[in-house]
Image (cartoon, rainbow, N blue to C red; front, top):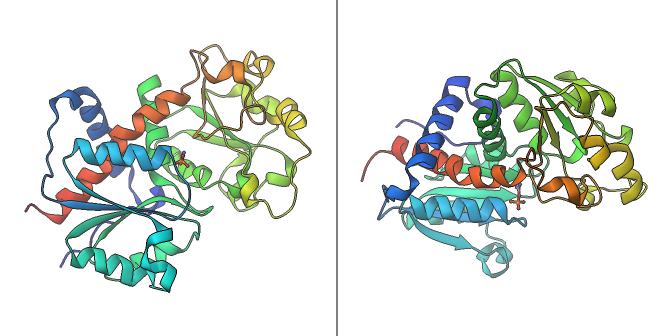
Length: 304
Ligand code: CP
């Protein structure tokens, strides 16, 4: 039997596969009012072992738009609290008719380990520790493509808490495959040597002045084992997007952030909804990309 095409990271997708997803996302954006409900009578489960608002709800909207029947999982009242393994949990879901599992987990290895086993379900990574967040990168790619009409030749600066971000890696793989130049910037304590094997680190001023896309990352205080920053105001003035920093961006450049945002830390209130800020557009686009990802999973499994 053909192995299921799990979606683990953009690292494992070709440019052509990603372009196919972007094309389908555009189709869904343009035709969503037609309410296709393509996958009625088929089941999906959302397993979130870590907090989420955007990813969880935009997957749920995408699932409803595709007509899928949705099982939402709560860790606290599940049998994982009795020690049931992840394999047994997902195998159980497969046994009762679930075909795809959308999973977010704090352990960055969890979904990749599960993908090595035959659970019977297609796995879709909705955020794995500090490792990968492929649907975020795909919706970011879609937003950039939508804005500029192409991605090749653009310079994208990713700025902030590089060390703890799962968004940065997935974005680097996707953007580089599309021919963008990716640079990174941020405080010395939040730099990541592994990331800098793949992209160039530049000073903050250069990053904001020279880029077509300025993508901020959230300071992930919940993942810091020691204090890596000296306070909100100090961070904002040195590495955050203030109005004054925004004014140094090129006139055509756009601002992005995967959110949730730490307002007053990596971004000032006054730039969040600037016309060249695409932050809420990114969230809007998440639905179309997640519809494309789910469609790929269900079509690949064959019709019922
Ligand atoms: N960007 C993102 O993953 O947001 P959530 O944590 O709210 O899902």
